[in-house]
Image (cartoon, rainbow, N blue to C red):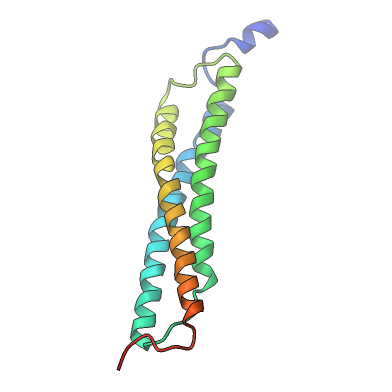
Length: 141
C-alpha cells in the first residue's frame, strides 16, 4: 500500500470512530446540565419563597449552566472537526453506527446550545434580581 492510497481509504480509522463517540457523551452532559440547571433555579425560587427574602444565587447555578453550554459547544465543534478531518483525509465519515449516533447527537447539541444559553441568561437574571433586592422582604404582609 502506498502513501497515497492510505489517504484515499474510504473508511474512517478506528481512532476516528473512537473520537467521534465523544460527541454523544458531550451532548448527554449538556442535556443533563440543562435539567439540573432548571432544577437548581426552581429550588432557589422555592427557597426564597419559603424564607420570604431574597438570597444570593449560589455559584453552582452558574457552574452548571456554563458547563452545559460548554459541553454543547464542544459536542458541535468535535463533530464538525472530525467530519472535516475525515473528508480531508479522503475517508467517507458517514458509514457506521458511530457516525449516525454522532450526527443525531450533533443535531441535539445544536438545540442544547440554545437551551443552555437560555439557562445561562436565566441564572444571570436571577442573580441580578437577587442582588438588586438583597435585604428586602420577598413576601408582602
